[in-house]
Amino acid sequence: MPLLRSLHRYPVKSMHRQDLDEAVLEPWGLRGDRRWMLARPDGTAITQRDLPELARYRPQLDEDGALRLTDPDGAELHVPAPRAGEHAAGTEHVERAEAVEGNVFGNRFAALAAEEKAQLWFAERFADSVGELRLLHLADPLARRINPDFSEPGETVSMADGYPLLATTTASLEALNEWLLEQGGAALPMTRFRPNLVVEGVEAWSEDGWQRVRVGTATFRAVKLCGRCIVTTTDQERGERTGQEPLRTLNKRRRIDKKAIFGVNLIPERPDRVTGTALGTLRVGDEVTVLARGERLPAV
Image 1: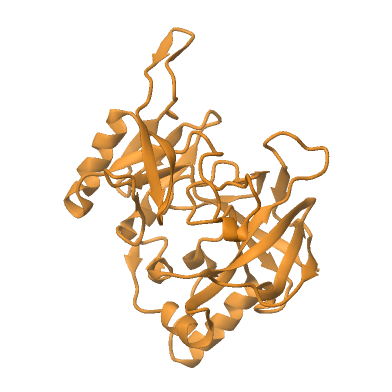
Image 2 (image 1 turned 45 degrees about the horizontal axis):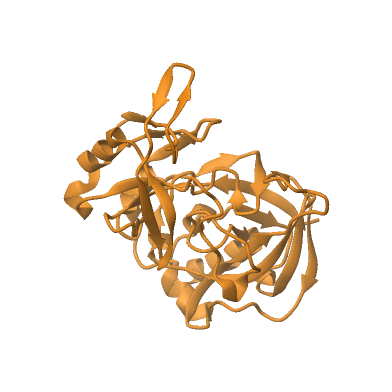
């Protein structure tokens, strides 16, 4: 029986993951997933493509959306979620945050800048590597539209690369690792691919033809295969590049639409009679059912 093997979110784009037992599903992804990111002054996202060492920064989220970060040396930072307007919370007065524009692969959207303390904290660590940078927060999860070629009107995404969730399968990783071992290389962990959902109990590469899938009580449309980049060559614990794999092998054995493919992008479906932002709760061990299959999904 196919099951949800593991569940992951990434509170800050390109930083370390959180391994979860359960997570609330929202229309734009797992609650708290990629609502923060580092960016250049023009709003362009800074990721592990630029700074592989971001993988060593460990985030936690408070219930109110505030961010807690621990750097590789153990130094900590607490950042309140910025707010669009001034307000008073008890005796605490929170200043209006600066409205800025975020940019993820040319998809531009409204965001808010974190407080100055956070900007200085990151400048101390990364200004010499990438120059001026800023920590941004996606206060409005409706602000960023999904590529209309693969979505329905009104569907949005967090500051993930393009889609609300990425699913991978253990069988596909096993198949990839067999290729790597045959070539004299080393097997790689699933963490290289930074998925949200990891599914076990299906055949390798069967996700290529998924159209609709149910996880527990939640349902999703499978819309696009995931083209992989240099981030997959980064050790997600050490924050270091490790060579050309798995990209070299994926480009040889899994090249689809001129992309090196591993994983599938999902968009949640809204259940009948559910009107709020919480669409349900995903739990490790949930049964997974492929509701509809079709031809191989596109990659671009």
